[in-house]
Image 1: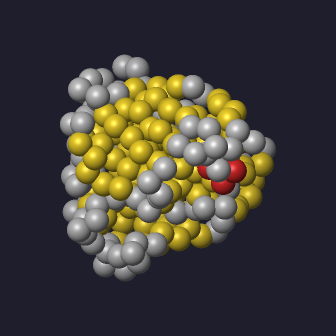
Image 2 (image 1 turned 30 degrees about the vertical axis):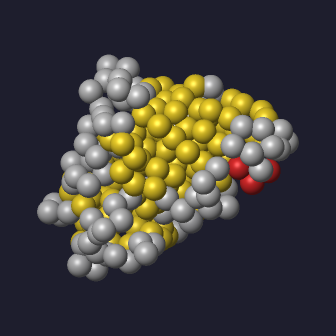
Length: 116
Length: 113
């Protein structure tokens, strides 16, 4: 069974640009969550999608957005990049949305974004 | 607001030793708690998930316990091996009105051969 895949694995951008990251969940998983990981802040929850609807959102500015397609694949977009957006962006999928106690999350390898 | 703390931040032990990693959380209204390991520069690997109605879960040399009332979880690793070297993170899923997952900063474990 294929795991969660994320593309691209590495990305270098300059300030002011925008970026789109992609996540393909495990087959049969309908919930996709996104996280930002930095050395100083650890893992911070960005948002969660379930059946193409954003169900939960973390405390990030509106420059961070996402969407989910009918096949459960998800994309995350960051506009007007800042130096502080440099981080490892992780995607996780699960069968159930985050309101379920059965919500075991499986993570992808991440996309390493560097903003110069 | 849920806060998750992991102690210690780093741990170095000789191979073969049994060890305990600690996780505490401030809001006991949770759906579940999940333990992960992360190797440098990699994604997270799920180790164990404990639902709020459970007290412990076991997988091989790993045993995780949950005490919701005191806001604590422990991950016990038996007979540690160099391959166990990684950062271990715990994450709680809140059952409050704002349902999201909160992670601890992690415990960096080094097992010395």
